[in-house]
Image 1 (cartoon, one colour):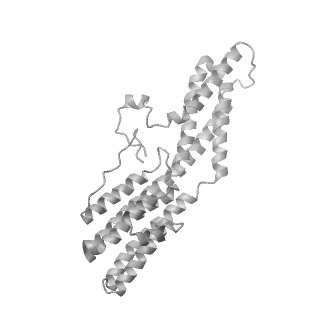
Image 2: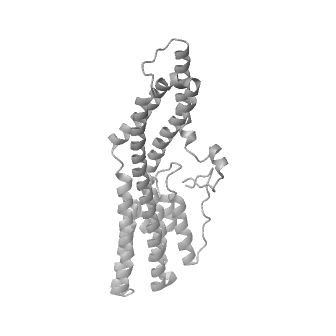
Length: 301
């Protein structure tokens, strides 16, 4: 996720690092070059334009803007929903761990709390398609680690381990029916977060809809110079590049927001949030805390 301090209005006009510009600049320059070529060919008499008014392109541009805005809003809703679920995850893990420590003491709850930390790391890796083996080996007992690593859904396997331990403690009278029920409420909350995140991760926006808007945006920008060359002359490359930057930038930004759990600059900082969970819960156990993750080139992983 891009993390930058608030810039002044003047600096916002010229800032490049941490923006979408580097990823769309080649396409924008391509449209500007095409526009310059069309204007030159028209003025040299090599090209006779049939479209002498930009009105038809203006109508198409308005329709395209509406569709791009709709897609951008849909993708942002996915991004914001994912962020809310991770906020709920942090809350559930803290509440679960604090109640376990209050009921069982630090030593008695240590396994549950360490497993909560492992769950945050495992969920981040699960959603990104990475391997959380290193964190699981570091946080879990060896016998439990082998069972979790053998599962295709490691966050769900960790929740099963939670359920098994809570049931064992209930049978051994370390928990009453009421305290067991309270802790399982948090366990159900974690299951809900896992299911919601998997729904977002594995259910993208309809592919045909994405392709339609992407193609239309590029075709519009490619046709734009032919509708503006006669009216604007050598100002055509400037205006075409500005419009291309807007449309290509929105299209690219929507692609990043559509998959909020990825590793693109505008995706959620899952590793940083998992590290926050570890810092908070290790503090509750009285253990040394890791350092918070810091952004590199304004990007927090």
